[in-house]
Every structure is written in C-alpha cells, then in structure tokens.
Image (cartoon, rainbow, N blue to C red; front, side, top):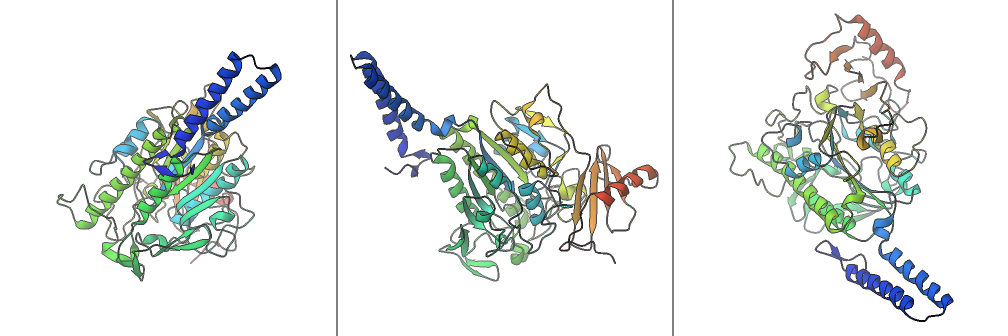
Length: 490
C-alpha cells in the first residue's frame, strides 16, 4: 500500500505501521518467552527494534518540523488578536493564545519581493540581493533558510508565491534549497487567483477549468488558494522519515490589480454577504476569514498526524495592507493604530503580525514587545534545528524570547533598516523606541517615538537634533552600494 496516499488526513499506511508495531512486539515477547538460543534471540531483538524505529521515525527525530505561513498584504490590524473588530479570525486568534504574539515585529520591506528576500536570507534591504520589486533574482551565492535546513536533514517544500527568481534563473526555489515547489514564480502572475497554470518544480502545470486573458479569469474553475491548501494538508498529513520545513506563502488578501475594482477575488463573500458593506469590502473580509479557516484545517491536520507537539508554526505578513483592487484599508482599520499602508515606510506599511506556536516549548498566551524583523526568522529557525546561522547576516535569533530561557539574555538589534526604491528613494530606521523616516536621500529625517506616538504624528526633528544626528549616522552606514539598487536623487 502506498505510504504517501492520504484519506481524510490519515495515511493509508497507518494500519500497516500499527501492524508492524504489533508484529515487532510479538517478536520480542515470543523470543523472550521461548527457549531461543542467545544469538538468535539478540538478532530477533535487533530486528524488532529496527522495525519499531522505522515505524516511529516521523515522531522520534530530535529537530522539530517547521511551518512558516506568510500572508500577502495582511495589515497589522487585520486579525482579532491584533484588535480587529469586524473580520473574524478565530483560528489565528487561538494560535496566538497557544503561542507567542509579537507587537513590535516588522516585515523586510513595504512591498513583496524585498520583504521575502529578507525573510529567506536573513539580510535587511540595505544588504540583501533583492531590495525592490523587480527582476533581480537570487543567485547561487545567496543562502536561504531552505538550504540551511536541508543541510540539517530537513525535507524542504514551498507551496504558494515565490517572487525571488524567474524561470531560467538561479533564483527559482528548486535552486535555492527547496526539494519541491508548487505555486507562482512571478509576483504579477500571483495577482490572479484563477490562473491557467502554476509551477510544479521547474515545469508549468496547466490548471484545467480556468481561462485567463490579461491577468483576469473569464472562466473560474479552481481557486489557487484552495490548491495550495490541499497540497499543504497532504504534505503535513503524509508520513515523513525526517523533519520538514514547509514554507506556505499564501496570496490572500492581495488584490488582483488587473481586475481593477473587482480585484478582491474570493469564491464567496460568506460570512459577510448580508453586511451593509461595499462589495469589495465584503470580499476583502471574506478572504481573510477564508485564510483563517484554512489555517484552522492545517492545525487540525497536525493533531491528526500526531505531530502537533513537534511542529513549530509561524505566521506573518509580507507588508502592510493595500489600497488596490477595490480594497480600502480604512474601512476595517487594517493598519490598526499605525500610520501608513503598503508602499509607506511608516509603521503601517511595515509593522506586521507575527505569531509563533510550538506546544510545550514556545511560551503560550504570551505577548512580546521585543523589536524584531522578518530577517530574524532565518537564525531563529536554524537555532531551533540545532544548526548555526551564517556569520555576518543582519538577523538575530529570537529563540531566547520564544523559549523563555531564563539564564540567557536575548540579543537585541542596534537598529532595523529599510529602503524603498519606488517613487524615488526613501529610507527608515528604528532603534529602541525611536523611528526615523527619510523620504528623500538628502532630506532631514522625520523623528518619531513610536511607543508614545504609534501613529507617527508628532515629528520630533526640530526639538531633538540629537536624534536627527543619530539617525543620519545610522543611515550613512546601514547600507552597501549595489549597482542594481542605486540611490536615486532628484
């Protein structure tokens, strides 16, 4: 019987494994009870223990499984556990109760590709290969989370959106440490929730039932999010003889920009159909609740597979909320108390939800105000896998905070740094409670105390020239020059 076939979340091989376990136990019992010669007895014991070890291989490996779930354009205020009042997210709220929720955590950028590059490589966008949305791919010298975990013996899989290398480049997932890939390579292709093809490994796979013209489906047979969830549930439910890393890079609630005001694509606007809201807002809310429901299914599958306690699950977003495809971030207060949205370097564009759950290890029902960013994910996960992160990266491990280690002090950042290459060239830094935003290369930085003033409404630059000077010093040394990402001056 095929060990990888799954029915209802339970492997067909489960019965075979149970039979093998019983047979192994019977062998030991019979050998012990009989007058078997010693040499034969010990050979029988060794064989029986080998069978038992094989049967329990999925749960006995020392390193935990890792699932990193990334939402697309989900705002800091879009989840109930972060203050959302209208959109229902019960499963992510439960995940927060069962794990640690970060309140001062940042994306790698205010747009897609550089944020995902920071996540994958551990470098902020002053040092990373990809610092803006464009066609620059990762190259063979770049080291990703997937590569590092694969070196530790992990099975690595990416399901969803990549955005760090096109077909024919060294940046595709299967050349950046992933054993398997199913999803979108190109971020513009990922706008369409009803694509006529997706990538499986390095080959296109047609999606029957979807007919597309100019980025919009005229015939809609298969919703890509459903396909990704099905693949993820199957991957998690199947037996594994080694730990795994699943990067589940979902596209909800990004808009299909090509569909203009009808870009919030979702199979149904339930459970908001009867609300007195504009249709795009019904769809936007439905997308987030749909995302949440799928995560609930995934968490249930972990329990069914018996690996819940040995699996780290992380959830975050790649940047702040959008105003695209009919979406209106003000309608649901998607940025919460923060200023700005996607493509802004104010906190509403870059501060994001971050939740980590690992039963029995990561502190439950905990809230952390540690200042961190998604380039910290790489060293954190590598430490959890008992590995060593590359020297010289910008990320720091958050393991001490997550595990509540009392005899070890959590390392903290000197500063966080961002740069943005659309609409000119802008930069931002955060050090301690202070945030600086520079909208042009030679402009005086705006200065904010983001703890006392989370909405970044009171610019302290005139009253605190000392902070301006500190900011300018950090800006001067936070980035390396890169011909692909020059500083643009008027």
